[in-house]
Length: 199
Image 1 (cartoon, rainbow, N blue to C red):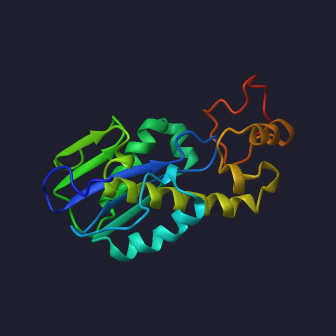
Image 2: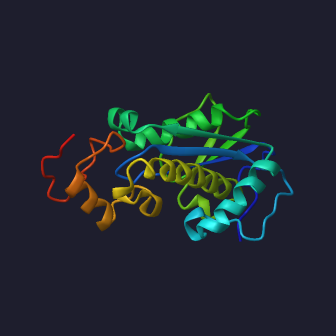
C-alpha cells in the first residue's frame, strides 16, 4: 500500500528518473506534487506495471496532480557529466518545471544534492512506497518510452520500441552489426567485448 506523504508538508514533491541503465537515449526525470486525496487503484512503481497501465495512468496523473514537471537529459550530457549526475540534474530540472514550489522533496534512490534550500529525503525503492514518487516514475517512464518509440522508427534495426534502449541481447546484436548511432551514449560499454565501433 503506497503512502500519500512522508514529511507532513502538504506541498511534497516526489521525483524519479527513467533510463539510467540504458545504452542510448536520454535520462528522463519527473517531479509530481499530488493533492491530499489522490488515489488510483493501480498506481505503483512503474516497473511493476504493464505498458498499458502506465499509459492509462499518465493522463490521470497529469489531470489530477497539483503540479508536475518532466525533463530530458540528452545522451551527450549524460556522457559529459556521468549518468548519476544526469539523473540528479534531470530531477532538479523537473522540480524547477513545477508550477508550485514544493515545501519538501522526496527522492527515489539514495543520491541527491540540495535543491534551492528545500529540505529533502532520499528513499530507497521510494517508487514502491510513496504515491508521488510512483507517479513521477510513471511519467518519467512513459515520456521516455514515447521518445524511444519515435527514434525506433528512424533506426528500427535496434528494436528500441521493445527494448527501450536497455542492454538486451537483441540491442547489443544490433550494435555489433550496425555500429553505434547518434543516440548511443559513447561513455557506456556498448558491447561486452567493447570492439571498435563505427561511430
